[in-house]
Length: 274
Image (cartoon, rainbow, N blue to C red; front, side, top):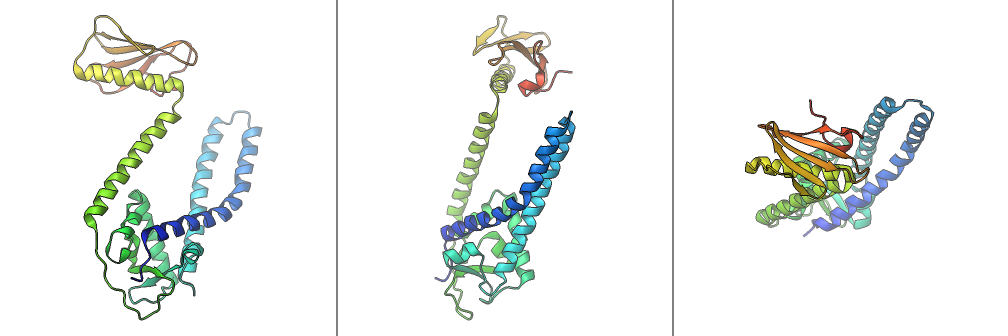
C-alpha cells in the first residue's frame, strides 16, 4: 500500500512542531524580555501584569499560527510536497489524483487541522483506522499522505476501515485526557486549596446524603457540622495553621468561604460568602 502509517505521520508531525517552535520562540524572546523589564520597573503592576500577560499569550498564539501555516502550506505545496518532518520520515502529500497540491489547497488543509485540535486530536487519531489512512483534515481537503516513492498516476487503492477499534481508542484517549487533567489540577493546588477542596467535597457529600451531624465530625484537620442555615466546615490551614470556615447553604450546591480571620479567602480557591 502507498499510504503512510499512523506512527510515521505522528513522528513527522512532532518533528515539524519542533521545527516551527524554534524560530517562533526566537522571535518571541525579545517580547518576553521586555515584559519582564516592565514588571520589574512597575510599582503596582498587578493590573498591568494581567493585561500584558493576556497580550503576550494572544501574540504568541497569532505568531505561532502564522508561522505554522506558512511552513506547512508552502512546503506541502512545494516541489517536494512535504514538510521537513515528512521528508525525514519519507512521506508526502498528494491530492485525490495523486498530484501535487497548490498553495491554496495546502492552506485549506492546514486550517482544517484546527478542527482536530478542538476535538482533542481525535481527527489526527483517525489516520490510523480509516480508509486510505486519512485523518479528518485529509477527508475535508481531499488529500492523502503517501510514501515518498509514490508517483503521479499510481493507483490509490482502498483499505479496510476499523471504526469500532477507532471508537474504543477514542474513548480510552478521552479517559486518559480526563484523568490527566484531574491529576494535573490536583497537583497544581496549594496545600491550602487542597485542604479546602477536600473539606468542600465532604460537605457536599453530607448535604447530598441528608446527614446533619449534631456533633462535629473531625477528619483530616477539618471539623464538619450542621447548623439551621446549612453545613459548615472549620478547616485548619496546613500552611499557616490558622482556621477558615467553608459554608454550604441549605438548598445550594455552591460551597463558599465564610471566614478566614488571619488569611484571605482567595487562598482557599473558593469565593467569599455574600
